[in-house]
Amino acid sequence: MNIHPTAVVSPEATLGHGVRIGAFCVVESDVILGDDCFLANHVVIKSGTTLGHNNLIFESAVLGGYPQHVNMPQRPGRVLIGNHNTLRESVTIHRALKEDETTVIGDRNLLMVNAHVGHDCRIGNNTVITNNAMLGGHVLVEDRAYVSGGVAVHQFCRIGSLAMVGGQARITRDVPPFVNIDGQTSLVVGLNQIGLRRAGFDEQTVKDLKAAYRLIYRSGLQWNEMLTQLRTTFADGMPAHFYEFLAATHRGIIPERRLPPGATLKLHREPEMQTPRIAKAG
Image 1 (cartoon, rainbow, N blue to C red):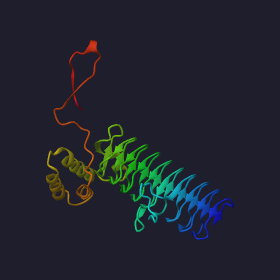
Image 2 (cartoon, helix red, strand yellow):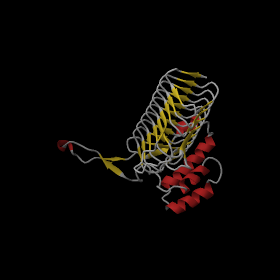
Image 3 (cartoon, one colour):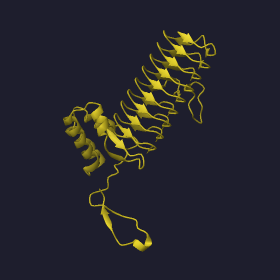
Image 4 (cartoon, rainbow, N blue to C red):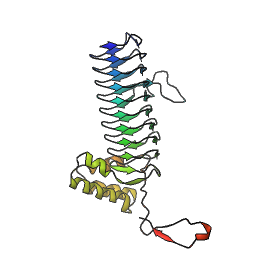
């Protein structure tokens, strides 16, 4: 164990073997730091926070702050962080609103500079949440999702596994698993094929995911009809997660950016050049 002499560590905190704590850190009471955790300078770990082992916490991160809520609870819940996570500079993670609830971060996640995780969020494993991303309260991020810089996620929204959310997108509905969200329009633009390939999915699985995607977004079926067909057609394997995720939505899912078949888009021209021209939407 290595604690800098300027750090303030409560005697009521529990520190594992090999913990390193940098200059001017504050570790409050009712904190658990697992084996081999590293706190860089100026890190604050507040009461009610538990970290597993081998977590790297960089400068000015604040973990376990009170929830940002107009009705501030007297006894908020906790923060539970798993193993092998990297939390970069100025990351903030808030405690759950209710005493018996927990904000949860899983294992092997990377939260980049200034990312914020609100109260009661649940983040899975192997996710990447990049610079200045903001997760409102009660947000769910499933395994291996990627949230790009400047993304704002509305409270109670969900981001499915292996989804890729483009920079500065505004997420106000659920993001289905395996899809790409365009940052400019905040709409779905197909499967996250690069992420699927990097995850090692075989060709047949990707084909099945494409077929399920087309059923969801391009079949023209009503919602309940689509769910029924999705459940029966893709009952096994990775595509089955589409049904599990969609059937549990309360906010609805983000629509596709693709225009309906036959739609046209007029191209803008200056007044002196306004010869009618129509371009087929690609």
